[in-house]
Structures are given as C-alpha cells and as structure tokens.
Image 1 (cartoon, rainbow, N blue to C red):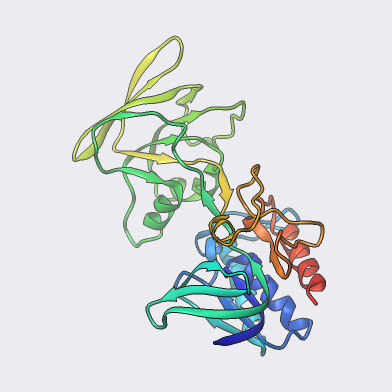
Image 2 (image 1 turned 45 degrees about the vertical axis):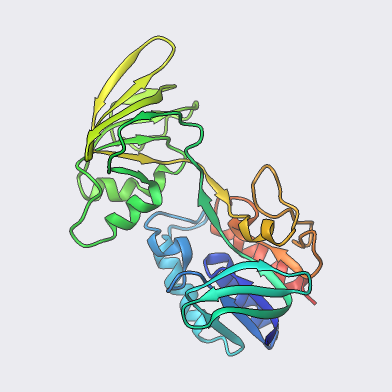
Length: 297
C-alpha cells in the first residue's frame, strides 16, 4: 500500500492550492487525487470572473495555478480516480480503470471535493419524458463543444448560478424565452424581458424533444414554448465522501463540518474550499488553503 504524508482529494482550485502550499511548506510526500481525467474542476469551464479584487476568469486562473503546480517537486498527481470512502485507519479506498479498487494511506487528508448542483426535488412536475432538460453544468459542457448549443429556445429555472452561463448565452445569441425566479433577486443579466417571478413548473410536454412547459402561481397558469429547460439551482457542498467516511456533516451546507483549524470530526482529516461551503470569491479559498496547510503537522 502506498503511503503519503498528505493526500488531497479533489483537484479543483482548493485542491491545487493546497498542493502548491504543501510543497512550499516542505511537506515531502503529497498525492493529489482527481476523479476527472484533467485538473481544474469547475475552473475548466469558468469563463466568468471569480475574483473580488481583479478581473480574472476561472480558465485564466487555472492556467496560473497549473504553472505553479508544474514547479512543485513533492506533488504526485493521480487522475481519473474516484475516492469512495476513508476507513478508520486513514486508508483511502478509491477506484480507477488503471488500478482497479485500491487503498492509499494518508498521514493527513484534505477533502477538497468542491460543489455539486442542487437537486430538482423542490420542483414537482409531471408530463412527458423528453430530451432537452439539463442542469446548468451540463449546458456549459455542451456550449464548450465546437459548434454545438444545448437548444435554440431556452427556458431557465432559477437564477442562483445564472452568472455561470451568462457569457455562453450571449456569445451564441441563444433565445432565452424566460427565466423563472423564486426569490427577490431580479439579477437576470438582461438575458430576457420575460421574468416569471414566483411561478412553479407544473407540467412539461414534448414528443421526443421538449416543446412546452406549463407554469403556475396562485393566480395564473401559462404555457411557454421552448425546446430546452435549464435548471440554474444554487450550488451545494459535496459531502458524499465525508458521509461515507463517518465524518459529521454541516446540515446548512451539506459539506463536512470543520472547526477553526479546518479539521473535521475525524482527526488528521481536513476540509476546505467549496467542499465545506460555497465561497464568494477565489481570495477566500486562497487564504483558507494557506491556513489549512499551516495547521497540518
């Protein structure tokens, strides 16, 4: 079994920052594990500003991070590897096509799993099972493909993460037929004049492909023609590995609960980044990753 002084689970912004700072602090044996075949996590598709002090997109920030990571001599990287859980003796159980199911031991472990999209459980809708219903992240992946768009006439449910999709929608001149908002926020980035405040989706119709969505509130029911429905729900911390590893979760964020030193309910296992709560800017994650490495002995 391979043993490391520090194992970092997740190679998005937080995971890479922890690896860079660990190398600076002379932690000699570091493993960075990522489930995807590339580094960067959400930064990879981030064409929006992630900073409060300067204008830098996630993609631009990723380039800067990878240059710094390339100069780290003590960091080993393992891609396309899914971490399943952490046993009581700090043995990380993970799986990959290359190595199958294996165990890796970490003297210290950082969970930097990042975030996931909120579910659609708040939306009770009936109707046809048809294509054209997407999460925001899936829509971004489609926009990132050459000469492909997710749809021509798009209805968007929610605006919590709409900023992530703003540039794609405007760049490809897509027709946004409407945006359904559930709170007092009116930030819709001038994507459409059709704002359906306090409406719910009650039904969807489509023969193979989405054709129409029925919206209702206490006073009115309307039908909106569209070929695509995108859910822009709030992001939630990804606490799946923590839950499987008997680590206490924060019910408000769904990520692992950490103390002032970013330690979870299990000693030598820490959490940081969007994996513990959703951060507003990259500067907060940078400070957090410096602190967490300083707290690791």
